[in-house]
Image (cartoon, rainbow, N blue to C red; front, side, top):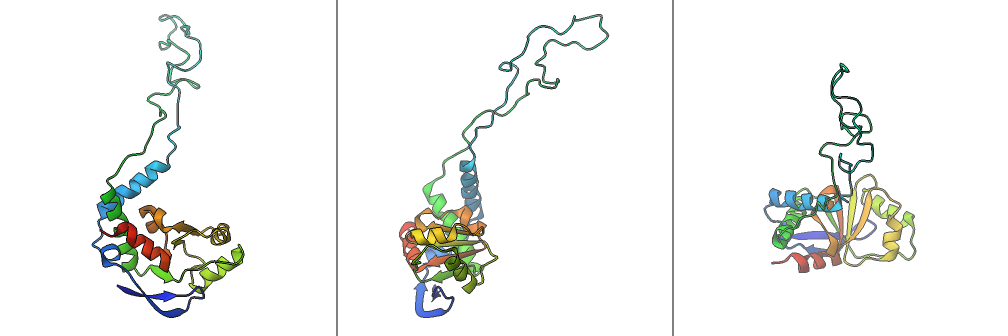
Length: 209
């Protein structure tokens, strides 16, 4: 698949970029996407939530009042889960939510996500670029040139340039990512992918069969 390459001013160049059909034009596998996104979100969870059940809650174990003769219900402990300040029934405990996926499935999921973006014309190829100084204004002008100011944009580069990252970090809807760290969740979460020529080559190295 042949696509036009733009410069950072948003105008077309004479060059064309070739997108490998085995990566950018496959039949998307929705279940693979679901599993990869599920794993990504599960891996973000700290799993540090904890609650105190009756066995670990501090408090007196003395019976509150005698069993019979009060006219009220039986009460055996101040730690009763029905009382305010009492224990928690079947509460959460620290755990690891992460799980493993087959490498081939993860590759399939990412190729499927990229294919969806190409199908919807949400991928733009731009020539490799860098800024002389780290200024938010530089990155804002870049987004303005591609009419992406109000769109959630994922900028995929072959090599992380410090000035590019520093220029983008004050912008809420933008994230700069290395091609080697590309993942299904962030591909689909972004409205538009702005990919450099160099990043295309890196992606092909990783995902070609």
